Image 1 (cartoon, rainbow, N blue to C red):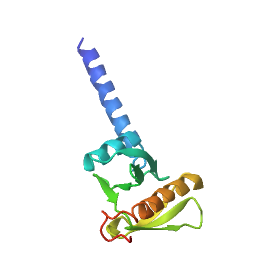
Image 2 (image 1 turned 135 degrees about the vertical axis):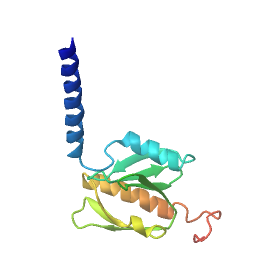
Image 3 (image 1 turned 60 degrees about the vertical axis):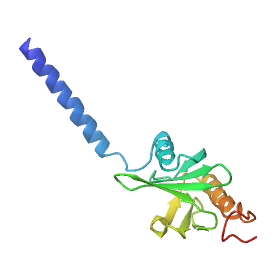
Length: 148
């Protein structure tokens, strides 16, 4: 009876440490879109998410919201930084490889960077969201600072 207890404890320790070692080799990033939805929903509960696109490395997620809005989410190791992109506050430049773009957030420069996606079509779709966010509110009088 005593030996079976020792065997079970050893099997438990082996299972725990083998799982821990396997997770150590996993890439850091947002591999689970469900987690991205939950985290962005916590940060901005009033925003309805239409779709998400993660970068190829999984370290950032671009969020398409209702009413031509867009959001951004970046893995900051111990937490996720969520950012609601304000109209007219982002600049996008295509990367030479074609499957990504460089983003300049005018109101959050610490999120600036180059982002690559799994394929050029996905990068193009996300850049169109950002363009829609940029011009989507240009004719709205309730958006201060936007040209009429």
